Length: 251
Length: 244
Image (cartoon, rainbow over all chains, first blue to last red; front, side, top):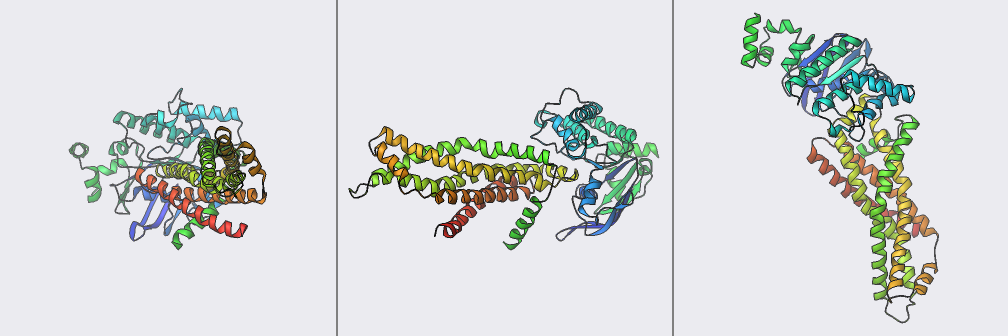
């Protein structure tokens, strides 16, 4: 379980996260949703330590992260897999080298064992015969899948995804969602996804946090969204006519 | 200005902290030697041969007095190359080629979140990406300087061989005349200092790039401009310290 307690984050004068608290359940898909500029990405990057909040605490299974020593932070980071919005694959390395990179750094496997693990991870994300291709030669969906393969290479305890469906067509987006769902269930990973794709939320979200102007103003599951009386959440989720009709039917 | 200097010092300290195991680190150094050193051989060679030839021609044309011995043409070409061209001028060229390459490479890695990906994996990204570049430049720039000196002198020799502005005998006699071995040491010291300046300043601007492609371009330009300025300033300081 990951717990965020009363964090504040400033960029100069701009107060982005305001006394924000949230909890993310173990072995579930936890969603962070909200409008663009609401602080979702800053929250995600604060949890993984790319931003340091000015106040508050973050716990990874009761281990405090923000104020921990750098060496301890690096140990926790080894338990984290991250899928960035653009994939963040190393452009000068091919698919195989990208997925093998964390294994080279932190595992004591032999070359053959590492290659087996790479092939297993690539097969798991349904990528075949692409080991020697470079990121520039892959489609957006394939890049995301390779990024997922790299993120799971070291069997992480926590998986973070920053808008995994951005820039993808609806069919590929569903495939990526299903893949994340399967991996989360299969390996018991605590997954946190930052998104504003409501299809994704309704498909796979177990625990949903709604961020509005730097505050976590609503937390619940996808069924509870339909009966919520949180005005800001309703404005965000049911902005389209389609979702308004779905809500009416569900109610 | 002071804030930027402080940020640079903090950056350099983080560059010299441990990042990954030696095997991976060594592989990175080899890759960088190829990218920074070997890939620069072509431009350094072409510029050096032509500048050596032109310098010899210009000196020969201007040394018209009968009291100036003709062998001084060879001496002038040799000392100009050892003292200034093969270190300072070659570094100004490398600031353009290598410096802009480093800044744009690291800047692109920053804006495409590749550096964040390294940090998340528990890697000290500054050290992993930049220290191999600094080491590669420290190893290869002095060799490029020696190559430049040799090829510059060869360029002058070709002029002596193919024209009548100076005889081959006078040119070679000039190359041997009053040779000061310390000048080579001075040139190598300058190259080491300049290689650190170029790689660290360029990496600094690349590492702190925020935004998009436009900002990568701006970082690249800043890297070249500041590298050139600091190479020129340190050239003056080192010359004052080592030669006077």
